[in-house]
Length: 175
Length: 175
Image (cartoon, rainbow over all chains, first blue to last red; front, side, top):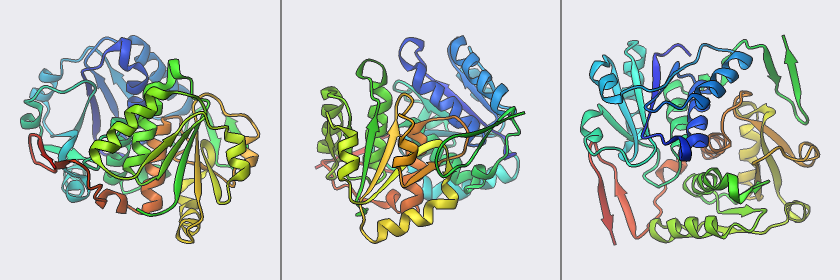
C-alpha cells in the first residue's frame, strides 16, 4: 500500500454531490490512495474524512479548493481519467501498475458532473470499468483493486478503532 | 454472467438515499446481478434503472415495495449480508462461488441506514470488503467482481447503445 496514488474529484457540487464524493474519498482511503483533492471548498467532506482517518488509522489526507488544471499541469506522473468511454481496465491495468512500480505518481481523475471535453486529451489514460453506466465509486474501487491486485484488502491501518472480522455480530477493538 | 444473484437494498429512504441506491442498482446490473429488490416504493429509481436497461441492454429487473423479511423467509438460496463487520471477502469468496456454481440463488443484502441487529444472525454469510468504513456501492462491486473473478467485465449486454472502448474521446454506436 505504498504506491503514490492521489484521487482528484472534479465538478463537485456541495449541495448535490456530498454523499457520493464522501464515498469517493472513503474508497480512496480504504483502497490504498494517499490523498484526495477536491475542486471546491467543501469543508464538511474534509472534516468527515479526516475524522475517519483519525479513528480508523492511516495517513490519508484531503485537500479542498484545488484548481485541477493547475494541479494537472504541475503533475509529474501519469493522469488516469475514469470514464465509461475509456479503454477497458482489464486491458490497461498492467501498464498502470508498471508506472506505480516505478513509483511515478498516479493521479486518478473522477468527474462528478460531465467533465470538460479536453479531459479526454489531457489524460494519459482514459479507463473504463465496464463500458456500462454505473457508479464512479464502484469504478474507483475496482481500479484500485486491480492496481494493487487485491493486496489492499490485507492492509492494516493501525487505527484507534479496529474492526475484527466476524461470522456474525460486531467485534470492535479500541486502542 | 448467468449466476442467479439478486441484490436487496434495505432501509432505503427516498428523500435521502436516492443517488446511492441508484448507484447500487446500476452496479448490480453492470456487474452481473439479475435483479434489485427495494424495500420502499421509490418509483423514480425503478424508472431510471429500467431506462438504463432498455437502452444499454441485458435482462436486469427491479422490484419495489418488497418486504425483505418475507423475501428472506422464502428465499431458497444463500443470504449474503455486506457489512464492514463481516468476514473478509478474500477468505470467503470461494465458498460463495461454490454456491453460485451449484446455481443456488444468492441474495446480497445491502443496508442503507443501520440494519436491524438480527440481520447478522439471519444471513448465511456476513461479508466485509475491508473492515474499514467506505461505501456499500464499492463493496457490492468488489464482491460481484470476486464472485465472477473478473468475467463480468467481458460481458456483452447487446443493448441499443454500445460504448466502444477508446483511448480518448467518446465512441458510441446506436443500433
